[in-house]
Length: 226
Image (cartoon, rainbow, N blue to C red; front, side, top):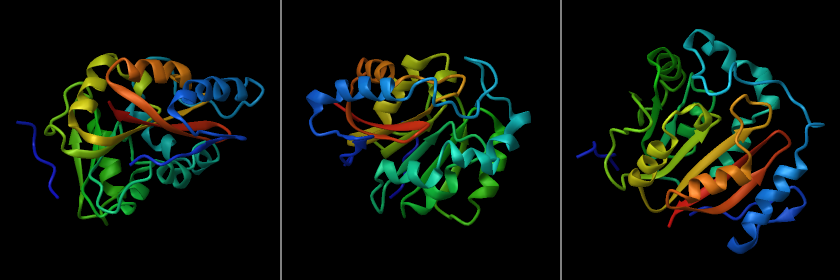
């Protein structure tokens, strides 16, 4: 399938607790925030709260030690992509997750970032994938068609976006009905968004929480347009 130019989430588990019904997901968010305390400290990610991570430090985001905090394999698996899913990685940076994303689907994958230098590094990391494309731009103005995607994935980037409302509206526009918006946040990131806060923010723009996968230092929250 082709993603035109602009013109099912899986049930998952929190540590020690199943996510069974939508009515209980808000409680699950609260429990996750309480479970990951300041005693569980990992490496500090990011540089300054609310600031875009500079391209001059791009290579540091590919440090293998980062896998101890954010496992690309577990993160991508948590999204639950279908075999032909059309995917947007929003704020891909230098492509820490990108190689596994493009291997997870036979459909097209778009790597999208504000910074050209980040995209150049990410492009080199997915050269083996003919279905991968790179686009530079602002997350609040996505150059993609309405309902053209099966999944949008964003990791530790939403807190850096000044116009979060505009970005979330755009994500909802480009997702097909029933599509998946996957958000990964990592404790100790300078722009970390707690799960309960994230759920309220995303819900205010037409999404509902469909599942959560929690790891020691991070979580992956899955949302669907409602």
